[in-house]
Amino acid sequence: MRDAYHEQLDSVGHTLVEMAGLVGRALSRATTALLEADLATAEAVISADDAVDALHRELDVRTLDLMARQQPVAGDLRTLVTSLRMSADLERMGDLARHIAKVARMRYPEHAVPQELRPIFEQMGEIGAELAENVARIVEDKDVEAARGIEARDDAVDRLHSAVFMALLAQDSPHTTESAIDVTLLSRYYERFADHAVSVARRLVFLVTGEQ
Image (cartoon, rainbow, N blue to C red; front, side, top):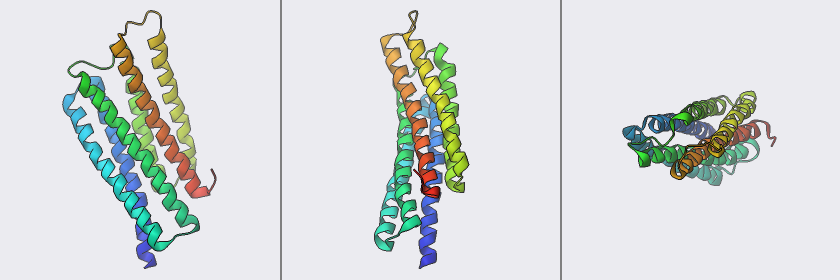
């Protein structure tokens, strides 16, 4: 019975790793859809988010069931409670990738991002996908040091987010109101995606060390 219980605990971690992989790929593909005005890829990202949502629901049910039946204490309880919160962060990351794809779809066949801002969004997409990949790795390896290093990459996204606003606020900005709204929302989606990655990393540190 205890072996089965620990296998179920391990499966929770495996599901989190799978979710992190899915949301990382979703953000990468959503960025492609956005920058290339690729309708088919945008539609694929939007549809694929159902898989992340399904894993989120499944993990929550499985975790709550384990808590009810096994009444875990100490480290096991911390693992299950923290996993619920990580799952919520990862599900939200998937939603944010979907939001980006929806903007790409809404503006198709036009590009939602003006040419001069494309390099910034390309960088945000690359860093975001890298963060999701790192999240998968730290959850799988329970790597506290790597988890603590994720915030530095989030700072890079914050700087890019600020650069978008500086470009929009420039006196000679050529952007229409519609374009400015699109770009503001998109930049916020990338910034929040990175924030949720940091949240997962902080929860991993708490899971392993018990320190907030």
